[in-house]
Amino acid sequence: MDNPFKLINQPLKEVPPELKTKVMNDIAMAKLIMELAALFSYNFSHVIETVISKRQKNNQL
Image 1 (tube, rainbow, N blue to C red):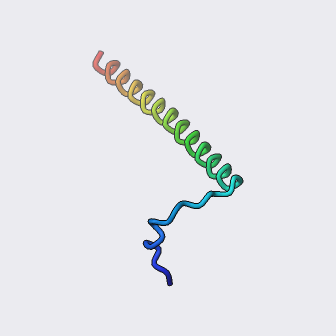
Image 2: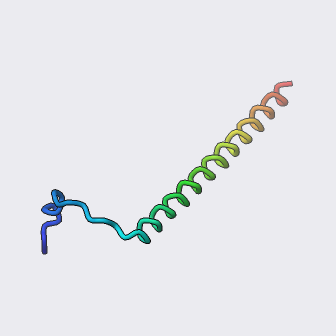
Image 3: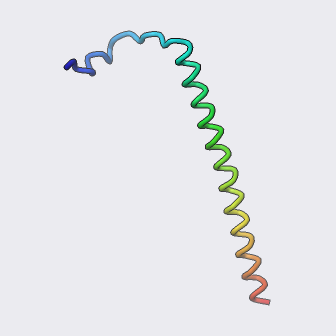
């Protein structure tokens, strides 16, 4: 079994264009999903916080 750490100082090899395109598309899709999840999770937390604060105000009146 070869030592993989010996390959660290070797020059980089070129990646095939189709593999590079696939990886970049996967990264773009993951980024989109993360942004959508952040958008919806922020809105849900804001809605819940608003509802709770309005209920507390109504109970005090």
